[in-house]
Image (cartoon, rainbow, N blue to C red; front, side, top):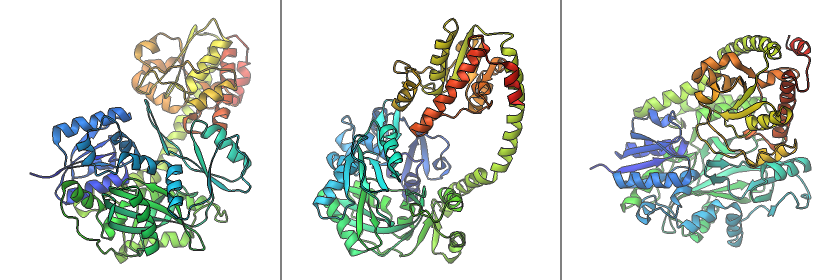
Length: 574
């Protein structure tokens, strides 16, 4: 009977590489993801694809139920999301063991940037000067500084929220990040270390090192620093391997991990953080000669793990999709900016010829699994070369909608609605803010809000509640609702925020289009798109609220509350 494995979060690079590695070893692979159209669904090695819950506790129950049915030999949490689910108190010990994971306390230390840097410092590893800060802390003595939440992900009932690292160039950026973007989390401040990123990847069994691999980043995306889109293997520097091993031994590590360093110009290897799972550049280790997923399988099944393999040095791998974004960013970037990891244009383009020398491969490339490679290339071409055609179609749609919307705005005063439904995607930011304002400006008007996101009863994010309070709008008691045909039918006027809302409305409730207006068409000057502040920095979210306030006030004016000249608005449209 074939060995069985469950690969969670298979939409990420590490997950897909793990599927291909295990598949090549004859393992029957079940894969799960919250994204039903991910690349893994095109892999011949996936025996069964499963829809994965986004909520951590639901995911834990999902894992236990699947294992109860299939009795997996190996379970692979490919990202921090599924790793956090494995730490659930409800996770049975035998399921946890087959995921080849370190003690839960050690994983929590590795996931906590402050705890891990304190441990590294106590063991004598070079670390950047670090401290915990808040908006009330004294300003740094010099800039730039690195600000990073001590946990890069925050789980909630709605799912997991990601927090990005910020390189604060000045006091204004530093204060804004702490006041707004990181207001609800503990933040670590580090001295900015200029240098190249180096990773030491390890497989350990009960605290003892089994395999090691070392690589350096060539392209980091975003350019300010991030995951690698292009990298190469380097000789195993004895000092780096010793430092990484010392750290993971102290954690009694079991399984895989990557210890990240920043190599300063003077050669000092500053410890940055621990990635306590398989990493995004896993393809490089596998293609260079160290198959970490196969090593995990051996540990999980009690099979003897071969001794440290030799691997190819100066071999390169590229994530074609991610690297195409790096190339575009590198072309647009200011190469004189010392905080950006840019490279010469000509050299970067010339390196695309390296596969011809057989000294470079691309992530996910497997001649026996060519459907994944073909699909990944097709995605890049659709994204980049389809832009022109999408732009032409978008401009045509925009022109038609703008003209029809301008006519509709002019007729609003002639047939004022008695009820208004305000829609946006999630019904937690724009639509509740605008609906609350409209209720205040037009108390006799029946007003409600809803969204297209398929989950009800979500609250507005903390940053949006703070931004709304600057306009005397209280969103603390708001809870989202999913729009339905019955709700749409109840209201005389439907207000939407952007063309994404328009397309959803057209697909689900086409009859409502005849009574629909874009809120931005009531702004000055009129426009179709009102940005979603959900992923925006706080200052930009406040700017969106100001735009919503102006347009909503103008809408109230058209309905006879604080009149705006319709002719003036129509002239602005023209």
